[in-house]
Each structure stands twice: as structure tokens, then as C-alpha cells.
Length: 298
Ligand code: GH3
Ligand code: MG
Ligand code: MG
Ligand code: MG
Image 1 (cartoon, rainbow, N blue to C red):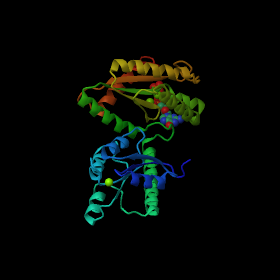
Image 2: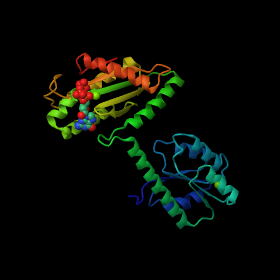
Image 3: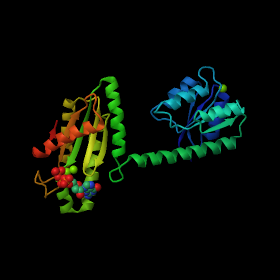
Image 4: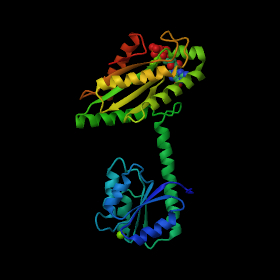
């Protein structure tokens, strides 16, 4: 069991430096090593990205400054804190490193205690940032993605679809007769029902590369990149059936006596904004409601 937790990537072309730094920290963190700039970039992009990178500057292939520059220009790695650890100790060199976005700069020969303390501080800051980010993008009631996450994600995926000429679909989902559910069972039970539905949607979409978000109130959204609207109908139907099969009693519902959902599907058209796409899915949802509810409509 690591005491502090977190994963540190040590990048240095000299084996001895790696050994010394790893020995210093391996009791507290998971250690990953890279012996070249190229390897460092690969390890930083790995599925389980490091929480901090200790980065040597002088390396034969790509030097540390260049590694830092590439990591900072890439959306998926720019948030990883980098500490330079190098013999290059002039004011100009240190300034350059910090201006490139490194959180800290340590010159060799280093004091082991200071390296440990600085790493610990930056790992803690990273942990706090990650937690704030998580809170910022998560719906507190259901624990799934919130509206802010949905907006960012949809925007991003629409840009990718436009660039790659790939399909993208949006499904808006709304619980049927939910006002009656609250009126009949009480608001707390309503909240519980929302959590059950959210968890079920999350579970039903496991393994598919798409987003399930709470859009607001008792409305949820599925964003389906790489999915045509015809394929999206099947996915929507699968989710509709999954919720129906939960068999949550709803005796005030005129639809079926249990909790059901209606879904509206829209395919992305080039030139769409998030608003126009959501509007089309909403119109389809409206038709599903007027067509009797517990339905998916394109
Ligand atoms: P329809 O079948 O047409 O969708 O009818 P409906 O009753 O579901 O639609 P309406 O929009 O009239 O009601 C939505 C209800 O959802 C009203 C509101 O009190 C409830 N609601 C919204 N957010 C929450 C929440 O966070 N918790 C609970 N318990 N209820 C919520
Ligand atoms: Mg070196
Ligand atoms: Mg609604
Ligand atoms: Mg509703």
C-alpha cells in the first residue's frame, strides 16, 4: 500500500538517476520510468496517465523542453504537472522551464528531502484540482455527467464529426409522468427514482463509447459519436426497454403502471450548433410524448 498514492513518471536518459529517484519515491507512489523523450511522450499518453512527471532536460533524442512543449500543447496531457530536474541551472534556463508551464524546477545535484517534499506538494495540488474538476462536471444527485460536461462533450464531438465527416447522434430522454410520481410518492422517492434511472442508463451503455448525462430535471441525454440516427434508434430502444424492465412501480402513471421513458433522436447535420441539434432531438421527444410515451422517435 503506497502511503501518498499517485503515479509519478520519471524521465531521464541515465539509468543511475532513475534508480536514485525511484528509490526515493517508490514507497509512496507508483513509479513509471522513461529513458528517452519519445518514451516519455508515450507513457504520458497511456490510459493510466501519471499524476506528475519528473523530467530531465538533456536527453539524446528529444530534449526535456521539447517533451514539455508537446505535452502542454496536447489537450489530453496538458494538465499533468511537470517538474524539471536538471543540471541546467542558470536563471535563463530555469525561467525558460517555468515559462513553458512546468510547475517546478529542481537543479542537480538535488537534495532528496526537497525533491520528495516538492513532489508531495504538487501531487496534493493535482489531487485537489482533479476533485474540483470532478465536482464541476458531475451531477450531485445522480453522480453522472452534468449539463456542463454534456455541453463541452457535445461541442467537441460535433467538431470532430465535422472534421472527419463521421456520423453523430443525440438522444434526449425524459421520464414519463414524473410530476405525478413526485406527487404520489413524494420528492425523496422522486430523487431515488432519478438515481435509479441514471444508474441504469449508465449500466446499459457500458462498453459503448458515448456519454450519458443529466440534462436537467428528469431529462437525460445520450451523445453517440460515430453513430448514425438509424443505429441510434436501436440504442435508444435498448435503453427504453432497460428502464421499463427495472419495473419501478408508478401507479399514477397512465402509461403502464411503472416508470417509463420517452426518447427523441436526432442525427448531426453539418452546420448544426449544439442548440439546433438539441432542438431537433427535443422535437422528436415531443412527438414520442404525443404518440403515447414509452417510445423512441427519430
Ligand atoms: P411527461 O410525461 O410529459 O414528461 O410529464 P412529466 O410529469 O414528467 O413532465 P413535467 O415536465 O410536467 O414534470 C417534470 C417533473 O420533474 C416536475 C419536477 O418537479 C420534477 N423534477 C425535476 N427535477 C427533479 C428532481 O431533481 N427531483 C425530483 N424529485 N423531481 C424533479
Ligand atoms: Mg540527461
Ligand atoms: Mg421534462
Ligand atoms: Mg417527464
